[in-house]
Amino acid sequence: MSTRNTTLRALHDVGLAAWFGGSLFGVAGLNAAADEAGDRQTVDRITSIGWAKWSPVNSVAVAAHLVGGAGLLAANRKRAVAQKGHTGTATAKLVLTGVALAATAYTRLVGKKVEDAAIHAASGASSSTVSPLDSSTTRQGGDTGVGETVRQADKAAGQATSAAAESLPVDVEQARRQLNALQYAIPVLTGAIVVLSAQAGEQQRPGDQLLGLARRAGSAVSSAVA
Image (cartoon, rainbow, N blue to C red; front, side, top):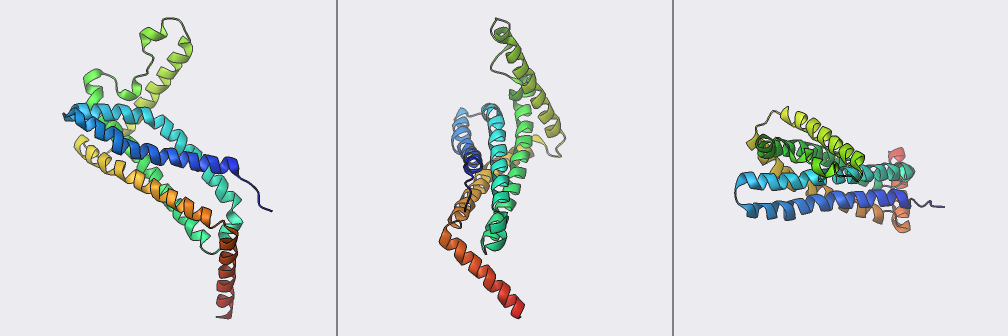
């Protein structure tokens, strides 16, 4: 009897949807809209702020996808071995996910390098250190403790990312070119994962499972005879 994995599938699918959809919107929507500003510094500032605000949400989405994916892989480990074809799909998904993770992490670093060049030097604060609750607001009653905690955590995260970005062996112009290429690559990679996930779902049909099991058994027999 099969066991349902609704929670794991929800984490896997919703996390992947946000990862893919957010990266696609960033390229097709945010970046394209910012380009209307004209000058390079303004474009960099607008896109940097937008991507920095999306980054924490994207991190949660990626984490949810990884938790769901790991759970589904563990739940289907026996079928992955026994059903011919499913092992290849699972392996391809793992490889693509690893590449997409590495690209996403590196994109954040080169993006922070561009962000700091556009904003930090001019204003004394990068977009990652600017909270919607400014100091004057947090002093005027309300939940000042929570507001200050959020600001300090945001600032610490921005400073840590800035330090890592500063150590990259690329200048700002190189970082900008790499950022542009990676921002197009991530929706391609995550879109490919969506396709492989659809394929994996099709392989769970009873007919496909029986065919895959039969093909695996036939291969084993052929190998034994040979």
